[in-house]
Image 1 (cartoon, rainbow, N blue to C red):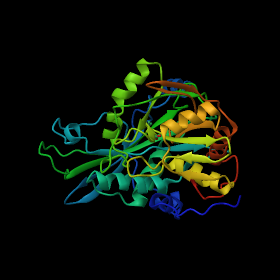
Image 2: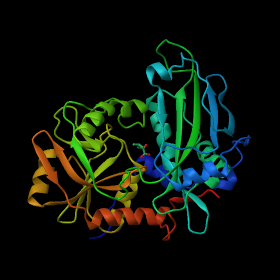
Image 3: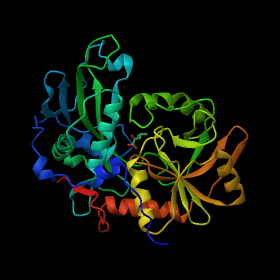
Image 4: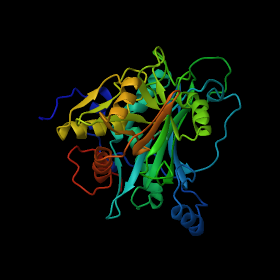
Length: 382
Ligand code: COI
């Protein structure tokens, strides 16, 4: 089949647009070096046991926005607890958005990130929805570059590992009235990380939630807003009590169609070779990994469909073997096979298959510099 045409979304166009190189943006966030960085023993202990998101590096990037000055005070400073008024609006009204992006160490020791223009566009999409100020794209990229250059020793090199970067911004104005804050703080922190799921590429089990929803039409579902993840926690706890590792959410009105997992998009591979994923309805997050996989599959001549996927059809498809594989994907999760899908009245087992494995390999080969990057997605930091 010929490669399919696809009109890029605004985020995809931003992710594929040419951005200034790292040397051109570097230095916007001057380094105030940590006088007490982790000792060699502390560093060795972290790097020898890479979990996800538990250990952090010596520094963080930061800048502040105020209504009268705009973004200012760009800096890379020692990683430390924040000093925040108990009245800071974020603590009360959850005006906060974040991103997930990674720094990868290639075999020659160089450090790269992946499609930073996509994340820059997405944090601004999220910021718009949460009535927060946008960040200049080059400032976003510079914050990542200056931070990672300061803490490059923390980028691990083992297969499946990376420095997971967490840019985030929140309303720091101390005010209990409900309004969009006039003071915002932005940070980038990083965590040397192994796989998000402790089993690595092993299949995970998913509980399909009924009665709970992560977001609804007109809400903040397409924004990477902390509140969306807060809404997923109770169903996640209940799924955990049943022995499942993640929750899949259905649409709000009919509880009929798949939306996404707590922090990942979902793909369905049919036995006839076509691949499906829930369409962007404004309720689900437009994942960068989702976008990259769709692009690679299309370019490989695989028929991909972004469409509504009814849970009943999925279950029937698994039972009749019309559905061959199901996987989750996200920056943190990369590509993770789903081996079991259950909910009220059903419990089906799904094999892990070659399409999932190939998507994982194709993506990570580009990210880790093991193959030529035909898309210009990889971005050298240092
Ligand atoms: C990411 O994949 O980067 C996310 O932000 C999802 C979160 C569950 C870790």
